[in-house]
Length: 194
Image 1 (spheres, one colour):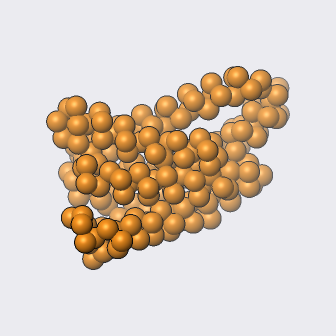
Image 2 (cartoon, helix red, strand yellow; image 1 turned 120 degrees about the vertical axis):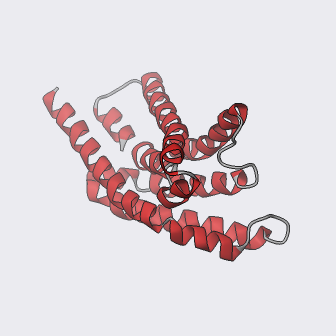
C-alpha cells in the first residue's frame, strides 16, 4: 500500500527505500516496546492473551508488502530477544524464538500479499489479516507438531495458548484493518491535496 502511494507521488527510488526503512524501524521498535508495556501492565498471561508483537507485524505486512513486512516479521522477535536478554529477561524466551520468528514471518508475508489490493480498497485488509493470522498460527502449531519430541513445546500446550490468544487475534482482526483504512484515506487525501 505504501509503495503505491510513493509511486503515485513519483518519489525517487532512494527516498522510497529510506521511507520504507524508517517505517520498518518504527514498527520493529513498536513490536519491541508494546509487549514490554503489556507485560508490565498485565503480566505474562497478558502477552499470551493480547499478542502485542503481532499488531505492528501485521501493520508492516499490510502497509509495506511482503518483502519489507517479512523483514519486520523476522527482526521484531529477534531484536526483542536480543534487547531484553541484555536487560536480563529475554522476550520471547530462547526456546520460543525460532517458532515466533517463523510465525511472525508468515504473518507479515501473507498480509503483505494483499498490499496492492488494500491500496485499491482498504476493506481488503480484513481478509489479509485473518488469512495471515490463520497461516501464522498454523505454522506455529505445525512446527510444534514436528519438533515436540525434542523441544519443550507440545501440540496441546500450544493449542491452549492459541485458544487463549483468540481475543488478541480478534481485536487485531478489527484494529489493523481500521488502521489500514485510515492510512489509505490519509495517503489518498494527501495526494489529492498536492
